Image (cartoon, rainbow, N blue to C red; front, side, top):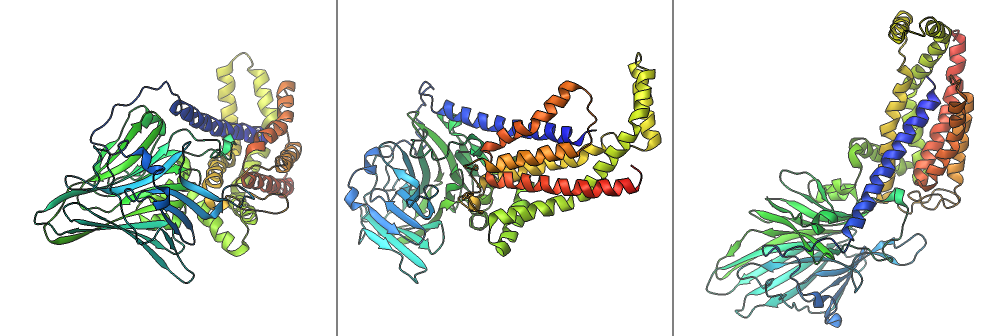
Length: 542
């Protein structure tokens, strides 16, 4: 069996799977952006869609600005919602001096994190479209050098004298924000309240947000959640637009909105039962959030309630420590069980070489080294198959009018000579999930975003801007093809095989540079291994 023909067919299948998945994702976005999709009915039990839309532009001078070593935030006085988040350690684009905006509030695009206290006696009266106006002692807070923690308190006092203090707690180098509520019930009656949190986003992205139009790099953009029974579940904006809204009861968990490399997530730590919900707002905006069960605060007592929000890059280690299963938001696809250990190995190698490109090269040698016994077995099987070709051809000539007898005789020959006709396919089948796992890993890990290699490769997560790497990859495929003994006699199949390196070079034009580097090095290793194995086979008379 011709190894190169099998390799090309398997890689072609991989590319088809990748392109099909990305087409489905693009098609889903188109459906979500379709204005003809039917409007949703209002769900009175849900919070989303009832907040005052004017608060995003009202009283801008009263908004609270916060700056830490990783954040630049804008917190609204109305409700204490987070209206804008800039990630200071991540550029908007390669070579840009502007920090990346995760949350944003402007006339074209809205992406907010809204939190508050509602219920029978809560200050957030969602049905009447009222948000409490908090007061801060100052409008600007900054984390100074040497400071490990920054607290931003805002206060609201209701008409009956109940004091609500909302404290945002920021920690140095951390993308999680702790939101602490202190409710001081000085009244003579018990009060009933609930906490809520929701993420709200415009479905259609403006041009300013569509920085990378490379369809092979598209990752999931939408909502996600985790409950007591469900570790991790993605939920498309398309489903919310079509009014397939969630209404899930759980004690613990989180809700999130995801995009490539970055996420916002609300982790609820409330006692009792929480309700996870989604809602469609005029086919234009969607929300995912949670609502706690009723909390009773007796008269003349205080109650502290704490929840956490993550706003930033999908850092697996930190997110995994923050909440169970939150690290699963790094979308490795269905091959996560391979991608995850591969990334851990890649990160371990990076700790020594301090270059992600060289780390990819080293991990390629490791993977191919582990697979060398299988590769050798593959070539041994192919060598035995070549030696049997005259006998197989003789059987075909003898029983050319009896296909059943021909098959029986050929299988008998394989058993007699102890040859597995599919033995040459095993290493290629094993390479298929590894290839896909690396694809998902290199497309999902924020650590590789804008990570330089050498020379003209300044971003391993993006395509080669000059298409040099795909051409080199095609050349290595052509060399392997010429070095491999061909069993193909049909002229049309020969022409097809001759064009395959060109076809795959074109496919790889849009692939991440890191993945193309892996495949180039893998091909070079194949060339070296072929020479070593062929020499050893000649010594055994094959």
